[in-house]
Length: 408
Ligand SMILES: Nc1nc2c(c(=O)[nH]1)N[C@H]1C(S)=C(S)[C@@H](COP(=O)(O)OP(=O)(O)OC[C@H]3O[C@@H](n4cnc5c(N)ncnc54)[C@H](O)[C@@H]3O)O[C@H]1N2
Ligand code: MOO
Image (tube, rainbow, N blue to C red):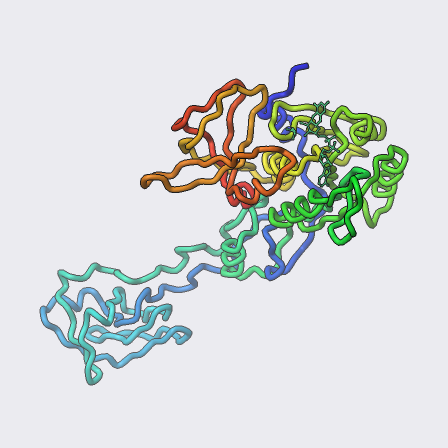
């Protein structure tokens, strides 16, 4: 059976992405990297007035025409003061951020003048540029200008920019995400370990991935390997208006084993769109919908969860928030390792970007088992080995830092 290429799967996911209906108005101090559901329009010019970029003196450039000039300094303007007016033949003491007085057109750094007894000895005109050290009104934003578009992320810089234009509340996408872990072998990390059982790591990992990538409304539920109970839990989540999610992400139960029930329930209760991709780790990746809600069925192996979330789920969530760009550009970096056997699936290796002889190279963790997370913690990103390719030492590979994948 041929597996669907990762690019085709991503294209299908992005095609199917419909805007999330759930939108929330939040105060800027609640910004946690969500996606804007509205354009942000400036209420002012930023800066609102021409102002000094340095501490020094404000003057008329034309007054510098005489060499070795000393002029009186009757005016003092600090940040927050009204600008005042400068008469010809005068200079004003001025500080960074203070409005430039009417009549002044140039600001000199105090280090370039001699200030004494209310007078200033000025440098030669040749060493000064007309208009220097003035930050013009509106250079950052103009009144009524759109400074951020719907679909952009509320990064810390964005929160600062939005505050600077006099806007304190914004509408953001706030989809409810239901994370379903599955498997009779799982226990919560605070339980006493029982024979044959393992601790759930997918639940905490996915929840943190979602929160860090701007999707904080996460509810987690654990499902046993019992189709009737899985069916009932899904029905409850879909019919209770307090719980009804906007997207569902499950882990485990999508492969070919007799105890892999999630895909079967999805097919029965909803619609299976596609299953099985040429991706390593993550082959049994499953996508469909239940009652119109997108359903991502991730494999159970924890590193497959990480890779599938970052490369397939998160880009789709971003598109549902109106984002144009859903994946960062990869860096092309040489491998400091080799992969001798060409694979049938596009492989996402857990790698580190390190310095070697003054150049950046990629180092691969020796154990790439999809059941392991210690290698994912050791790594700082993923390197991509396309289907059918071997990697010789020094070959360049696409490398995505985790930070860029998560931040978008
Ligand atoms: N005969 C075949 N067997 C398998 C195939 C295959 O093609 N033929 N594919 C393998 C691949 S690749 C993957 S990936 C796994 C995925 O299987 P499932 O998605 O059905 O996942 P499970 O079997 O439920 O779990 C796999 C693995 O992960 C552990 N797990 C599950 N949930 C969690 C959790 N929340 N926290 C930590 N670990 C979890 C689980 O115990 C299993 O060890 O199938 C292969 N098999
Ligand atoms: O696709 Mo699986 O995660 O390689 O073991």
